[in-house]
Each structure stands twice: as C-alpha cells, then as structure tokens.
Image (cartoon, rainbow, N blue to C red):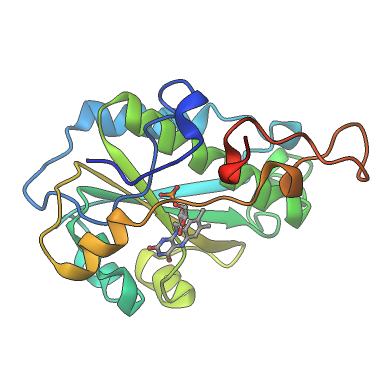
Length: 212
Ligand SMILES: Cc1cc2nc3c(=O)[nH]c(=O)nc-3n(C[C@H](O)[C@H](O)[C@H](O)COP(=O)(O)O)c2cc1C
C-alpha cells in the first residue's frame, strides 16, 4: 500500500517509493544493524564546510526516554508512538562552551545552513530507510523545549524535528485510512523551478496537472 504520488513514477528507487505513512506496525522491532545503517546515512550526508552541525537522539520504542518523550508529541502526531524508532534531530545553534578554543565545535555555525544540513541528514535517513524496506516519516509537531528537556539536550543545540521509522501497517482507523490514501500533491514544476533565470518557468512534464 502506498499513498498515491502522481508524477513521481519517473523517479528511481528509493525515491519513487518514499512517502510518509502514519500507520506503523507496533510489533515490529528494528534490529540494531538496521538502526546503525540508518544513522550512518545521516552521518555521511554532506554539510557546509563539513560542519555536521547536528546530533540525532535515537529512541527505540519502549526504550530509554521513549515514553517520556512521547508525552511531548502534538495531539495530531500520536501515530509516532507506534514507530519502531524515532530519531530526534537537534541542530547546533551556537559554539560548544566546553570545546577546545579554535576547534570545529567551538566555531559558530551560520543558522540557516545548520538547519539546511540537518534537513539534508534527515533526508538521507528517509531514503536509507526505504532501501532497508522500512518507512520514515519526518515531523516537527512536538513541544520542542519539552523534548529537549526530556532528552537532556544542551543549550547550544535546539531540537528541530523527529524522524519516525518502522514497518508500515495498513491502517484500520478512519482518520489514518483517510490520511494515508490522500494523494500527495506538489507545487507545479513551473512554479517550483525556473530555467536559466527567475523569469522562465521550467517546462511542465507531459501529464503534469492534466496537461497534454
Ligand atoms: C520538517 C517537516 C515537518 C513535518 N511535520 C509533520 C508533522 O508534525 N506531522 C505529520 O504528520 N507530518 C509532518 N511532516 C510530513 C509532511 O506533512 C509530508 O512530508 C508532506 O505532506 C508530503 O507527504 P509525503 O512525505 O508523504 O510525500 C513533516 C515533514 C517535514 C519535512
């Protein structure tokens, strides 16, 4: 089962089958080897100046801090509880006060690029998950300060998002059936992309938005 993703058939795997399910198998246990490959995918993502300005806090379902952290989830994100693991992303927002002066960790990271790099690491996790025949769903709906508190995140980092990972289970609850069956939509190619300059929209592929 896969949410409809019109126009995405041109992509190759694991991009083509990536989507964000909200129904995870609560009995699936992710093995340590898979979890390690997932975090390596983040670790090997590119970043500005190779600054790698993020930390992922890995929470296994029912493992250390999982239950307390679940208490920080937004009401609409209760589905995250069933995922086999959650990788909470924290972005570095300032230098490490304890770092060796002059070291990489002691340097400032421009905030925009720190977030950019963290998102890129997260994207790599989502694709690696597909390659392991798992699914990933990123989310930001949680009390970020409360999550930082529960996980002991230091002040020079800020919790940014989470990546729920697990095995998809076709949902039975009406709200999840509706959510998962909803066709995924994207801005049109011409709106999102330009050809050689801002003024020329990139041409829409055949069939996009009903075009011939
Ligand atoms: C930074 C970020 C935050 C998101 N926050 C939430 C969230 O709080 N709850 C949720 O259900 N989905 C969340 N999503 C998932 C998006 O809604 C989803 O990726 C988008 O609708 C496209 O659907 P698709 O991933 O299935 O293609 C988030 C995604 C990103 C990248």
